[in-house]
Length: 123
Image (cartoon, rainbow, N blue to C red; front, side, top):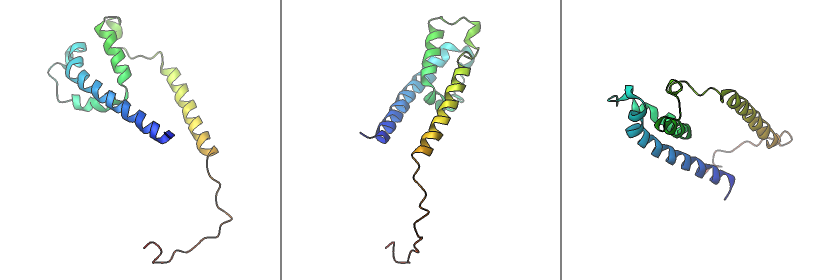
């Protein structure tokens, strides 16, 4: 299995699990953790892309609120303690991707003479 196939399979698995979490959370879970959304069904499809991407965080927060491990006041406060770490990791990730892209870049074919294609070459 090559790297591309592994990445595609990982993204498909992430999306399938995210779709299952979105289906369960948006039909059952959201009513249980937030009383303001009861009966509001029109906006729920708008949440599907977000839940697909951050389903581990959705499950974690849902578990915290259901088991009452999170204090009531903290329930609506964003999780900001890890934002600084996330910014640093994303910045390092972008730099790593740029460096990796530049290191595997092929050399420019400056010494190869251009070739004019004829009309029937593609047929």
